[in-house]
Amino acid sequence: MIKLRNLEKAVKHGPGQIFLLRRIDLDVATGEFVTVMGPSGAGKSTLLAILGLLDHAWTGEYELFGERVDGLQGKQRAELAKRTVGFVFQQYHLLDSLTVAENLEAPLSYRNMRSSERQALVADTLDRFGIVGKKDLYPAQLSGGQQQLVGVARALIANPKLLLADEPTGNLHSEQGAEIMGLFRELNRQGTTIVQVTHSEANAAYGNRIVRLRDGWLAR
Image (tube, rainbow, N blue to C red; front, side):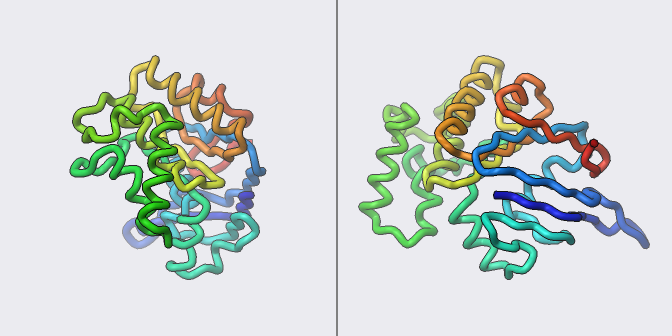
């Protein structure tokens, strides 16, 4: 599913540059649940942004679902991301002015779908995640755990093949965090490939492989 070869990311710093990622070689197979760990500044979130096609200022080779990402133009990368990738963020990133149902529908508005199809998919997702009773509430009316659950539902509503999660329980208390991680494990059992970034060894235990970064390098 994912193949990285000699991937590097650098940013300008004075007359030179600082490398955020160095010579990354990584494979993730379909159906895996991979955790990326490492200290702050190790390059974890940078790597996740590249995997999610949010960052294109890097060098090396990146193959996703058989397509060479490094050879795609911006619009092509965006289309590939919409078709295949779902993102769960630590900060939820729900739209405050939209209800739960409207937040779920938002990513579908970029697809060539009729309104009736979008509404049916939203209804199915609300039922799947047990949040039908919250559909008319706004994010400010939800607890942190409920907001993150909506964030996960939104990431999955278009049935992505790859779910990327950046510290998905970082703002939750332990019980809420365990609920979200249990949901991830079940999604993985159902076939969703997951790559998560976390500092938590407890969260890492839900996956089946740990990749460690230090100073931009993969630990061997």
